[in-house]
Image (cartoon, rainbow, N blue to C red; front, side, top):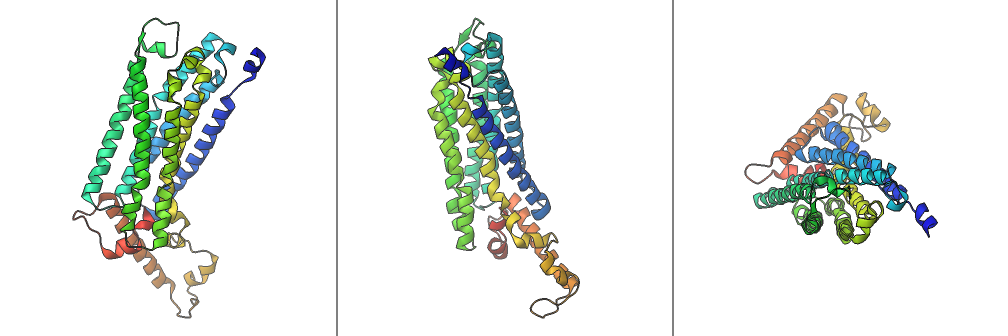
Length: 346
């Protein structure tokens, strides 16, 4: 039995989850900023909050990765006391960064949805949602620090002091539940918002589908709540490097999905041929047009005229993007921008 326990190691499982999440997050965040800076040429508050979320994700995952080196994922009975203590210290340090990564990811999605709607009531609703999110996650960070006194008791059982386990348990469930409900709201909210936009049903269904992928994030959040008991169970107290693993793994899944899902809706211009035309790339099939040759319909459209049309289209694109960022003051947008360009540049 002891030999079997000695061979058990869930560290590689956690490492695989984190590496996959980091790689996919890096791909989508890079694609997002390429789309914003090169194709759309306009960035918004939502983009920078997504970047902040990704940075805090890297910090948290780096700390957890270092903890694996010291024994996280293995049974504490098979580790030296000092290694167990240092591994758990790194885990609790990572828990100080995960609320910020989680909150900024949700804030990014909320600001993204505010770019779609012109309703002042809905914008205020999202602002309130952002405020609640910030407040709860700040409370969670202080709750972790104030659970035990001295704080070192969180990871070092040799230290004498006092821990308010009940306070930590209540805050863990409250923060986890509020995060999952927020993800659920942000996943469902795009449906009524986009249904009133004047565009094709295909585009509506596509964007609603992309934004509603947030349901997977909510699902990961609710699953994580189911493992929250591990933060205070007797098994975790006796075997901390092993007992917390399910909670940590699902926390990492939730954080990764919050970054990935929040970026996917912004990548649509990356796959739109018209967007590539606006930045001057049309491919070999259109090289004749740019060299002054005849167009396929025989109209003989000159290179200068086509460039003017592309420039004009780009100006309209920029105008709509700027309105999306600041919102129209009178609560309305022009028919042309909402019909042609609006939902494509979310």
